[in-house]
Length: 239
Image (tube, rainbow, N blue to C red; front, side, top):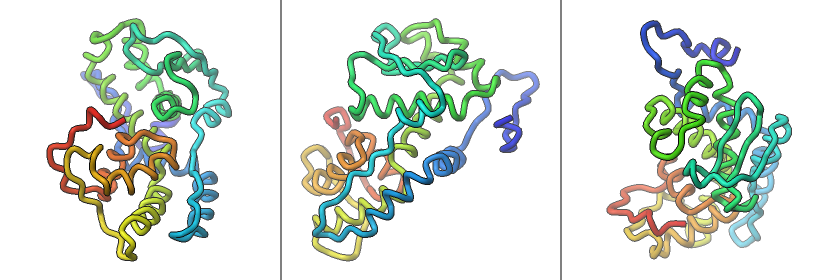
């Protein structure tokens, strides 16, 4: 039993709240899951100098899902206003047919749904995921517990597609490439960030080499303390 093994309380008499998982716990679960892939990419990055061609460091969420015997289908999800959905009972993931496999948003959606599969399969979580499975649009997002499960799945996808150790190594490489120095510091960028040269030349290449969007990488670097003091950032234009 996933929750009992990890000392997560599942009995909340008199309440109907889904169990809460911390960011640290989710990142630890993911790090064990993708450990071998991370070791491989870290080894190649540590051999890479500032003037060398930097290797791509792609973690493949589709492959992990397939190994766990999840069936991946393409569907029109416009009515649900989602880019992905998982049927926990049938072990079927439906991804938007408006995106193609490998696109940053599609990879994040796959990681997100796979996150539900890995950390929300216990009945205490599933009751909230399935309770609004037939609802559409705003009605689905109104369920508070479901919102927190979506946040947890986003954390899972972020940690899976952008593992901390790989992000740090890539950040160090591209910081030194751009600033021509050896003392790596957190990056300060000014709004609008899509026009900031430091952002584009440090964060942009990291996002491309990890197969994620600039927005996803921006958020991850903020979480890791590598981007600081952002003022009036216009995220709407970040793709």
